[in-house]
Length: 305
Image (cartoon, rainbow, N blue to C red; front, top):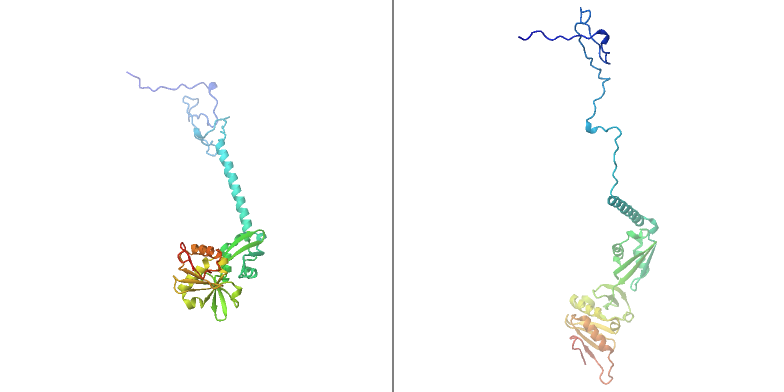
């Protein structure tokens, strides 16, 4: 039968007791005991202020003496970075130069050079462009110049060129007068569109054909048909004309200064008719059979009589 006695712990000798560890309070003596039949031990709880902080997880700790390897950046990536840096620098410099050019007072307009004028004077063009003076050349557009010259009806179009540091060259393309319209004692110069470009008291000074009464007398359609014919003629032929008339839009006639008549017809194929007429006028004249009428109404089969 097993024994009911609990095993006992034999105490060590006093002279062989182990030294107390730091933080232990040492063995406590049992009250009423003299020598130590039973040994009990207690564990002191360290103060949290002196307790060491908990260690980091193993994956966050770097072993002592560990070396971190730095892999070099690929050459392609470094090259791309250099290229992007260079491009960005160039763009910034160009933007700075453009801003300086656009707003710099060094390029302010001081002089307007005018060419191609006959009906208007260069001084008139310069006076019309006076609001642009002092404005930087890069800020002056063709539309700005056209808008300011719109009051000069003789100007049909312009070509503008900036000549740094301070000159603007304006080439004027004027409307071409093709006829004189008699209005009372004066004669008005008109172009192919019927725009009145000026007046004169002496029709011989203009060397242009005269349209008696003009658009108001012969009607807008007839006037436009006549003006379109005159606008197609070469300058040397136009200078030989005395007057122009039209019974209808299909029956335009011209008179030369020597009394010869040109039957033109309508305004169709006007370029071909002009070439044929110029060739007929250059043909040697026959004193025995002088030409009185040049009929180019059918330009591929012209007739003289």
